[in-house]
Image (cartoon, rainbow, N blue to C red):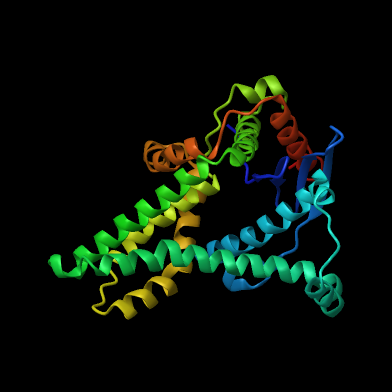
Length: 305
């Protein structure tokens, strides 16, 4: 079985595949044609030596993947022609920002979106469990038990959030493209020709999926926070927030290790991620697979190694 670091993401009406130096995005347009766009990757945070060190490189990868994710979602909407359908005359505030920031406005909007997403995620999955868990404190034998309760609450909130998203009808199309992305990578790693028929027979689950990364964050945070025992709620809140990057870094190392190995321990560790991917992926049709294959071939054309 071939080992590869090629990853991907479902986008609006298509799939993105990412190599070491560039990424390719294949998007179905409103006229029924499939457009493939290639974009080079810059070094980003990896130009700093610190962010090439284990755990710290995971922090950089997590942040850069969020920025890239927002960027390609916005670009895929343009390629798909969805922005043309809702195009309106810009309001006074929008014109002000366009005049003030010019071409940089899109970049600032991406960073703002990432910042809002981070604040929302940390608030929902790390701050809220501490607040709710504090109500159980009088009934618990110590801070160690409080850490367990917080971890279980965090996991329950996360799973409930994923379940609610999976029930949204609009997300089912995205999940089919997500499934196509996994199937295509699995087909490539099994060294089979990238055809719709070959891709279709592979599993839609993959060890290096971002969904698995998120469940690792939830589970690893339970272990890390269990050993960080503080009495006051404010210190617990601060410690949880400050340790989020380190938990993300550890989770990244785990998922990268899992992607390189096939032993029984890896198979066991991968099961929670696989279970969650049953909600965040769906069986794709030929249309979704064609987009994933086109994106994969776009990367392989520039990075055949």
